[in-house]
Image 1 (cartoon, rainbow over the protein chains, first blue to last red):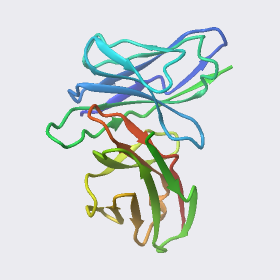
Image 2 (cartoon, chains in turn orange, blue):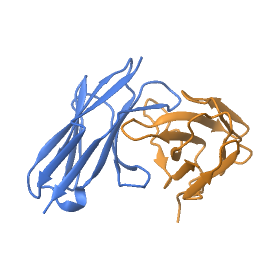
Image 3 (cartoon, rainbow over the protein chains, first blue to last red):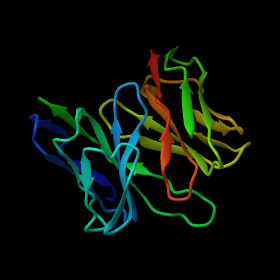
Length: 116
Length: 110
């Protein structure tokens, strides 16, 4: 059954700690993305990766880091440098459709991070 | 800068009461406009992609339309299970970045 999994579903972090959110996909998609969702705001892009061993910063990358060692996995680390990390984090993946068409992003179930 | 504005912010409907959600966008070179449905505490679920003005797509009670400046999501004879937040997003460049609106929260009461 193909899809995107994120773990854990809920995560609590003490101030000053780094935490890592997991994202795995078995859709054989090339591109993966991390978004942050806050109440009343649209999803904002943190990092994206179009291919293994390569990734780029999105609009709000400060205080976050990622790696892309395998096609299926794109973990996100929320570092202690992120001043306001409490949010709902969403991972997505897509594969280029070629030509002039765009590629649809499919989302995982999300991880809710709370700073204590 | 690309911008996406959704209205209204919230919408309360009686079961069977049809309505429309609006997504206005400002983008240079639209490659695609996306509609997603999001239930509380869950990830967005893909509904439609629209590529060019005049295009329409339907799925059950939902119909999405696109003009050069905005998109509408029409909900016909809604049921309580249509209650969700509906997100609109646009893609303007070649590698896949989506610009999201803040969403419209729809509540359908029996």
